Image (cartoon, rainbow, N blue to C red):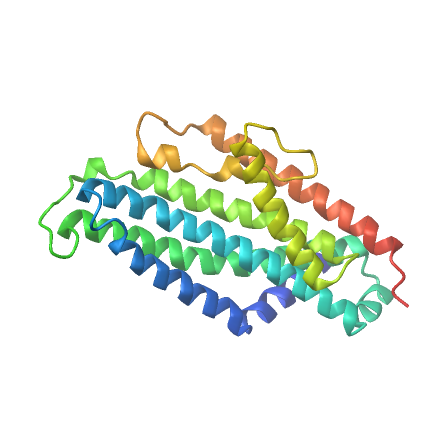
Amino acid sequence: MTVLVIARLAFLSYLRQPMLWLTTAVGLAFLALSMVFGMFNFFDADRLRLVCTAGVAITTLNGLFLGSVGAATSIGQEMRHRTILVLLAKPISAADFMIGKALGIWIATLLSLAIIAIAHLLLVAYLAQHGFPGSRTFFPPDWIPYHRVAVGHVLAGLNAGVMTCLAAAVAARTSTTTAIIASFAAFIAAHVLAGLGQPSALFLPATTLFNIDDSIQSARFPLNLGYFSLCLLHAVLYASCSLVFGTILMNRRDLV
């Protein structure tokens, strides 16, 4: 019950932040701009595939930004204002505080991502039925990978949850800025190592698991329940370990 109360307060507090809605608006603007990507270099079919992957990429980056910045800022404010002393003085454990904060920020982030995901699916459906501006190329319904695009957005939400928990854990011991930079660095390093063919270290999230561009681009790379289950398992385990680590750091931090 305590976790839910903290999560609700964190969720409502984040909803009141202009940054959440500004970032959502920027994501929608980039989504609209994706219609002009490749207009001079690609056929309409390739442009539509590009729009499909661009929307999922926008959701992923928005989730990374909102989850990491939101968690680090929320916990950092509690530390700076010393309100955490009042919270922990009551029958509220550090674990409840960490889980509640991360959960509330993640749910608020998911709300933003859901808005972008719905707009993206509607845009893809519109382009499939009416074609790109100035073009008369239409696409049959079975040609559009709606289900794979939808799964891509779900995986982007899971990735946002992982990065939210990671930022929350780092913010328990460091400054807000450090926590944000560390989260972004972990995301980038995991992708760079994967691109070099090197497995990421245990302390880095396997964020490339949530990237299914190949599946969206081509039916030759089908999605299955096993792959989705692997992503879900990784997200749950990494997020849980991050929160446990953050709780340990908070318990050992001198808050006085």
